[in-house]
Image 1 (cartoon, rainbow, N blue to C red):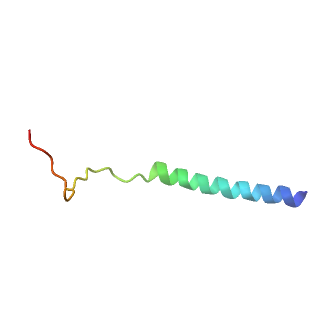
Image 2: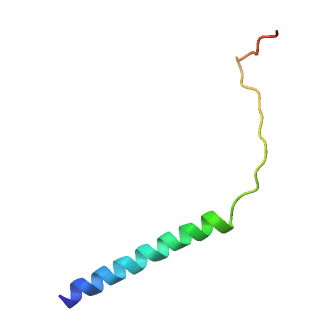
Image 3: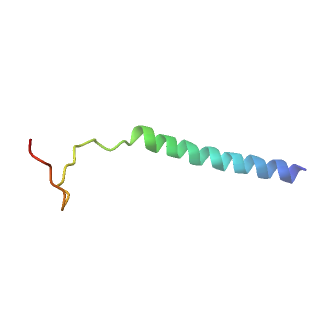
Length: 48
């Protein structure tokens, strides 16, 4: 039984570290937003 508890504890600790790292990357390292517009070949906008 102690080996099961140790395994669950280490698995939970690893999962918490991964989710915490992903959270920090998502919140503190957001890329700057910019407008991207590029023409699509073969598509024309009808004039009114």
